[in-house]
Image (cartoon, protein in one colour):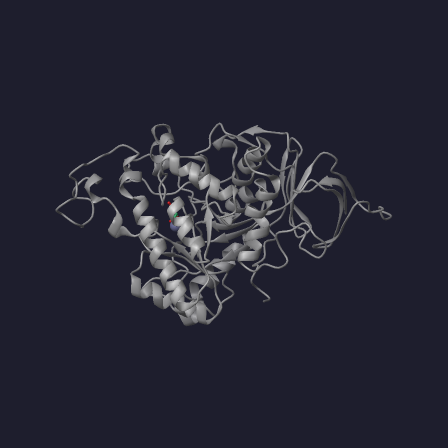
Length: 442
Ligand SMILES: NC(=O)N[C@@H](CC(=O)O)C(=O)O
Ligand SMILES: [Zn+2]
Ligand SMILES: [Zn+2]
């Protein structure tokens, strides 16, 4: 196949030849071969498919929230060609049996995938770390969905075990000791009974008041100290504060920011209500702006979605009872491209945040670039075709989005290792499940 006259992220216009699963050549002009399929990409933007290093596809355990089939369709329709699934499923992915069970379910995936393993007091590091794991993590330093928060000693042991075996570690960095119990109605959980409930609140912003920025600062600090002591390369998941990002960068660790922490703030909570509850929570508008600056200036390494679908019925509850998390895998690249179109980010920066740098951080040498020899994981866009995001049109089982009504630039075509997984020429079409574990065969 010959893709002619595509515009790459850096503005170069190139012909791109795909042979089998790989990009064979990227040149100014390539002569079509006899019988070669020609794709006219004049005026179109060709990007490496997004590597979303943080999704929760919910299988096994919660197929009503998401499955590998539904989640990977959402990914393909959003220009995502590799996803990395997190361990807080049921059973949690903490030993050989659970890893093998999840790998079998991932055969339904349209896009390539990684499976990360988790840490609980019951985990089996010898079994788990011997599997073709993407990374260890997200390791939860405080409870989130799945209640997998662990203590400092177990964290240090887990980081040491992963480092010994050359496995990367990703960290959910919040410290529950720094949560503000005074805003939580008394009677919720045990805790510091003294302060609990003194300033009880039930509005949606209470979640942001409860899970404080200091909780992130403290946990990033602790994680970095452990990482520095053990000489480990840690990746801090979903950083939401400038302080957390700066601390991670200072110690040479990498970090990610989600589209919701980049684009939404506490100012949006009156409208979002409990549908804006996630961990870590939305921060002040000022902090959001400071996070955005760090995404544009390169302090933040990657954008990952933390796609965390819950059903509408589950989310439609009181702020202290609704589950935490928002879907995002289908809207991330479209939202970033809309930001780029408005001049707030460059297309090159979008490519680096979503593909080139995740491939470098997580050691995926065949992925993340439109270059000869790489996997033909590609997404083609009309950079002027903005589309108003509608939750009911998205493919996650969630059926809602915190970005309702925002502009997105969605792919016309998404390819995984040379095969079409998504096509939209007015009608949407999906390819077959063909996802492979990006760590198998290593
Ligand atoms: N981010 C969230 O609020 N929720 C995630 C878990 C997590 O990433 O902490 C989920 O799995 O629902
Ligand atoms: Zn998390
Ligand atoms: Zn997560």
